Length: 259
Image (cartoon, rainbow, N blue to C red; front, side, top):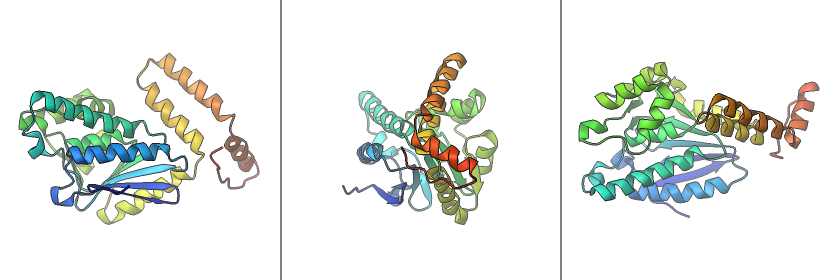
């Protein structure tokens, strides 16, 4: 399937999804969200894919939702638009494989929310993060008020959302919004290296670990530990576990087969 506002490629077992509206700084409109929704359904079915990278074309990751489109929405239409964005970002969050946001520039509003829906965020030094919505008379609508506080705590979430202040990549790293910051020219290599490292590990174990972290964060500690206990036990039913432990004992490299 061909897309107008996004592009997608797979190199071996690593996918790269690019928001491709550079003339609009990759702003998210209904067309982008619809195309993302369709592509994510296909990505979810790809049993061979071990990691997904999401980035933006040009000098922006995603500069936000499309303000021109939003300015004409009625309250009911705005609710539907927000529901669409939340649904698409939730699909990203629930993908079985890890998702890395390669934040190459502006990650504002919906762009910051998109990055937060990913499992890991690596930023270039030119990246800029923020939730500027209250300066426009609205508030975050694609999950920002909820994911931001889970990532950086309520204090920083309220500071960023209520002040509409943007922060640079180094500050985002300091408060835990991103996991690493690199030079612009090093971003692609850094993200690819991380994706390859993840893809080289046992895929079933990686999937179960991601699921345990995500699910466990939503429940009490005893329930979360039970989730881990069950997932841990499941890994022992795989061929990858048998081959991986054998390779470790024999001081050999293991090529995991996703079995």
